[in-house]
Image (cartoon, rainbow, N blue to C red):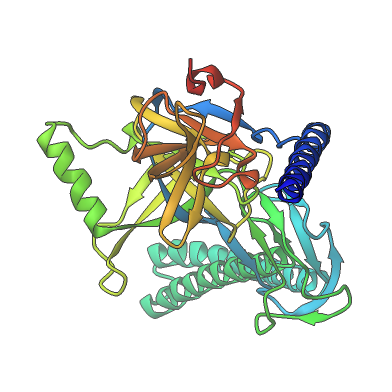
Length: 389
């Protein structure tokens, strides 16, 4: 009996010791966890509320710049190219001499024609005097009618010869003028295809091209469906269609807006059966020659009156296989994916056609650090709106 009780007390002591050790270890573990790495705070993101403001509803088209005038300069007479009076790629004025062909042979032709005229005029004077004498003699009966007719014919022939020589002079002077090739329009000169000293003529290739730069055209096409829709809207609103009521701007391929606004001046009267589109043309001032022929631009077509629309920064818009979306932050500071339908661009903003409401907070910076459903710390404009009270 004694031994049994003693063994029980011994076992009880071991149990108490084990319990004591367990409590001691637990007590030691608590400060170790407290002193370890704490849980990371939610990542910070910059948010901005969806805004509503008045903007010009804009439709975009791909356009191509085209010169109003482009002239190929060619030689109209044959001769040696003596001078080139322009710098390739530089501006020239209308009427400026750009090429000179050796004028010596043509000047000689002018001189010869003038000499022939002088000779013909001498004969004209002689025949005129002979006719006058014949008319006096016929009145006295000293010559026959046949002699008078011969005098008249000689005078008429001399007059015709003078006219022919004058025409030869005019022709020779025209040929001489062709030795000076001028720029028929103001613009930029292209590359010269011939060097000084080459023999050129009417059969030669183009010497150079001069292209007008200011103003300049931009051509683009509009689908026949859009044309019909716009005209139906104009009829429904009982508005007359005026090209001047349409605002035309350009966005360049570096993303900037062209500083000059244009004016629509042509809409084709028929649909291209191959493409189902209608050609439209706008004219733009181009004083600094920013626009170059054959350059591609984005044409921005809008009305004159602004409309009240929802807009978001372009930086907030993302895209995947399902389409465009933005990341929003709800009242619990949780990230949500919002699928959106986008309209047209307005500078650095984009019009929202559907999927968002005014005042919703969307992430504009830091979206690469978050995922849908994650908690974030919003900062920026309107950040407190998403913070729970």
